[in-house]
Length: 276
Image (cartoon, rainbow, N blue to C red):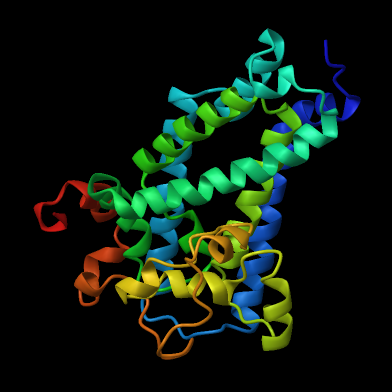
């Protein structure tokens, strides 16, 4: 049986602190950066948006913990105990499995994101994220609870298929959470540094294109963490046609809709007739 390093036991023992600490630390850092040096002027009152976007995250987290109390980490522990998954029949070392698992999980997250854009019933859920008329750190938290649950089902299936180590799953979720807040930040990086950085990670300017109201731009730059999949699969767009300052954020059909910043509206949006 594969020997489990002490690092995995450490991560599991401190999981709640690691999750909350990473979230709070990155959120606070990006929030302060946005206050000190915002990239774009926001169009909607911040207080209402922030209350609604963070409220949506809270509801999604509660729903996830109620239906999947152990989440993907629990699935990884189950796979380890029962020796299920492709990795358990391989000769890979533990840290090789960790690295490969993180890369594969990121790729499947990219594919899942494209699926939520391509399948109409899934797009109804995902458009809650895109309906935001502004783009800041809280946009990275704005996902419908049902989308969060479906995403967890897909992630758990991949974890079980691979037999991904617990360490890999927890590290992937911590990294994805951090990069999602970073690349949704209302912040700008120096152009040369941005071009260099986006070779390795999705930057705010790169992901901002994905939140354009133009459909061709919305259907590009699907990566949340690693940018390579967009480069390799032809979905990369370097910049918006109108430029980063003049581009329109959100969805065209909701540009004049005051409800986009209201939490109740976000929850019912996928079920409204007008979304068909």
